[in-house]
Length: 210
Image (cartoon, rainbow, N blue to C red; front, side, top):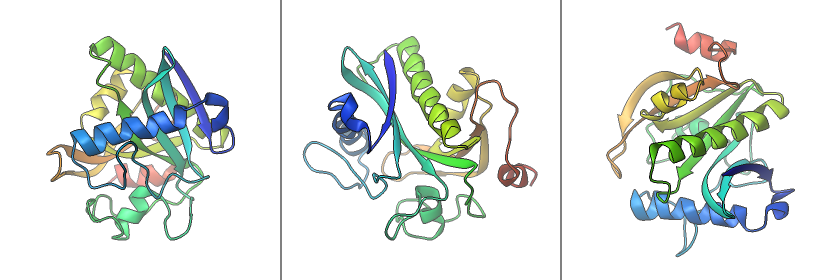
C-alpha cells in the first residue's frame, strides 16, 4: 500500500484517486451506514470538498482503499467553515450542537473528516497499516501548513486505534449516538506526530483541564 496527499491544485497528478475516494465514501457512508449526504449513484461529495481541503489517500495496486480529508479550523468557503464549527452553529442537522462547549479557530489546529477504509481490507494488520498511512498523510499536510494538532469528530473506537499506532489521541467532551448507524461519536484530538505528548495547543489544554 502507498499513501499520497493532494489538494485541488495537484490532484491531477494522481489520476482518478480523488474521484475514487469520493466513490469509496459513497459506498461506506451512504450505502453501508445510511447517512443522509449529498450523492449520486456513484460518489458522495459535500460542502467541505473545496479548494481549501487537502486529502490523504491510500492506494493498493492502483486502487483507492482508504482516505480522509483535512482543512484548517480557520477555513471559510461560502456559507460554511469546517464541520465541527458548523455543527456548533447548528448548521448540520445530524450532529448535535453541544459536542464541545466552544469553537476552535486556530491555524495551529486542523480538522480531519471523512475517514474511510475499504472493506476489501479484511485483516486487522491490513486495516491498521492503511489507517497509519492515512493519518501519517494528514499529519504531513498539517505540519507542512504550520499546524501542530489535529481534531476530528469520529467514532469513539478510533481513539484506541490511534493510540495503538503511537498517536497520543484524547477525547474532548461527551459522546453521542448517531441515529443512522447506531455508533457513538465524539471529538478527538491529537498532536501532529507519533509519540508526542498531548496536547500541544492552548486550545485543547483548556478543554482537557476541565
